Length: 368
Image 1 (cartoon, rainbow, N blue to C red):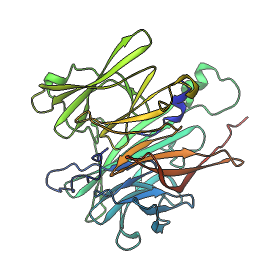
Image 2 (image 1 turned 180 degrees about the horizontal axis):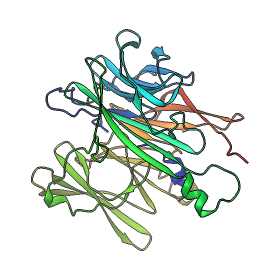
Image 3 (image 1 turned 45 degrees about the horizontal axis):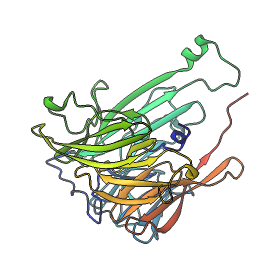
């Protein structure tokens, strides 16, 4: 279970050298191609990631070269056509944020700034110790739908009473529609999910998957990719588990096939950040595994096809875009700062193609 500390990441891309569908403003939603700490363009050629200089780098995903940088934000949300959607805190208003749209053909020049989006007065978007804040976005009929979650918890040093813990705990979520023409904000019903994704047919409502890690929690719901839904199945015999993938037609709910994936010990399946793959490793120390099996096995969720077997490494997120797997790796601390890199690994050879410095972890100790 200690490896769960390294899986911290949370949806579209094909496996080898293919691109995400182009944004269709009439038949939306169009969801982001997620990378660790960033997003890729729909073609899977350029990545936009939080850099180590309080900004965003546009990166050539084939070479790792920096194409341009911007200081407008450190929070990329969505890339489509010639635009990059980001969010940023509002100056002198710690409980407000804005959605910005940048021109990716003009070195990230800002072309749109939304009205402020108000958050609860206890929410802190800079996320110091005792607070967390996350955001997401998708494109929907000429607008960006921006969703957010804010949480607060007890951050003192002394052992608190149950009453203190209860008083410190706060949770909130919301969403807003931002016009791409005017930047006008329409706050949406907080009781309705801002991005539920494709609905499962009634015939699949009771289908359960063998649990898998999403980057933030464990799930047992079917995984939807395109016009298919998949569910992991595990069969245990002594200390060995046989993992397979049951694939369904999304429209009819009918089972299409079951594809064997992997047999091993302590299998740990995780949905990739791109949402189209499952990444599996055996959660055991290297010395307890056969030569070569201290590894990640990567499979397509819509076919069960294995696309790679790569050397295992402790990572806080995996995404598969084009012909590479992208990992977020942390280095040893340097005082309160823990440097991180985005690493690109070739799916065919398993070799590291490039590394790029990205936003570090700021280790702030809790108050006494």
